[in-house]
Length: 391
Image 1 (spheres, rainbow, N blue to C red):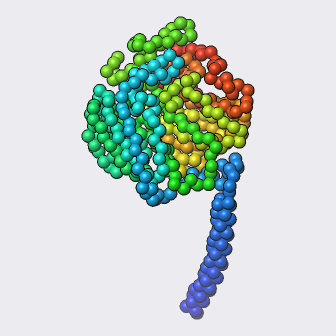
Image 2 (cartoon, rainbow, N blue to C red):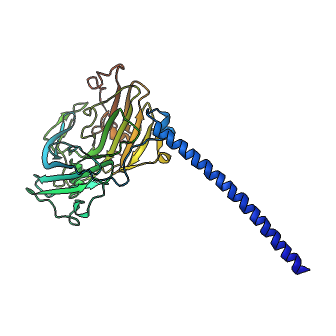
Image 3 (cartoon, rainbow, N blue to C red):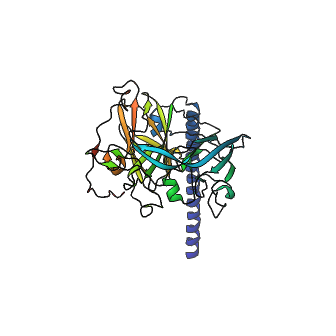
C-alpha cells in the first residue's frame, strides 16, 4: 500500500509538471510574439522617421550611422603635418612660443570617411624628436606612434608617413607621444573626425567642436606682457621643461580650440536647430562642462556610438583627460547662453574672470547677437587666496 501510494503521488506530480510546463511554454510563446510585434513596430517607426524633434532624444534616441565592418572605399586621403615652433596668441595680449602642426593650435582637423585610407606624412622641424599617436583609433601596431615600442622617434629634419584604414566612424584625436607632457601642453594635437559611410537617420543643422586644453605661462619671463586690472603685468611666455625649475601642473590659462575666452569665436544657432558638438579633452585636467539654457544628450563616447538605452540627458558632463564625447543640443530657448567649465578656476585668464573655458552660444535674431564679441564685460581679478588656485 505504501508503495502504491508513493507511485500514485509520483504520477500526480508528473501530471502537474507536464501541465505547468505547457502553461509556461504558452506564456513564453505569447511574450515572444509580443516582443516581435513591438520590435517590428519600433523598427518601422525608426525607418520612417524623416524629421528630428526633441522627443526623439528622450524616446528613440539618436542614430549616428556607421557600419560594424565598413568596406574599404578605395580612396586615399593624404595630409601633411609639419611640427614646428610658432607664436600663438591664447588670450588677449598673451602670445606663447607654441609647438604647432602647420602653424596652428590645434593642428588642422583631419576629416575622412570610414573605409578611407589615411596617408599622413609628419615632417619634424622642431629642435627635438617627436611622433604622432592616433588617440582612440585602432590602427596597425607599426602606425601607433609610440617610441620606442612601435617606431623610432622622428628626429629633427626627418619625416615619417603613417598609413592606415579609418576603421570606424567617430570623434578622435591625434597628438605627440614623445616628451608628451611638454609637447602636448605646448600645442601638438588636433582633431580626427571619421564620418560614417551610412549617415544614419539623424540630420544635424549645425556642428561645432571643442578641444579643451590648458597652458602654463611663466610669469618670470617677459617676452610678451599685457596689462591687467590694477596695472599689473602678466607674462606671455610658455614655460618649458628647460626653464624655471621644469614643468609643473600650475596651469593658468585654459583654451577652447587654442583660444581662451574672449578670443574664441561664439557659436551662432537658429531656433529649432539640432546641434552636434564634438568635445575632446587633450589637457591633463578634468573639465565638468555645464550648459546654460538647455539640456543636451550624450550620444557617443571615445569614438563609440552609444545605443539609445545608454544615451543620457544632462546639463553638466565631466570630461576627463583623454576623453571625447559627442553631444546633441536642441536649440529651443532663444538668447545668449554660455557653455563653460564648472571648475571655475578654468574660467579665468591667469586668475582674472571671465576667461578660459567659456563658450558663448548666440541665437540669430536675438538682442546682442552682433555685439557678443565687441562688448565684453570688464574683467575682475579673483581673490589670490582661493583654495585650489594651483590648478
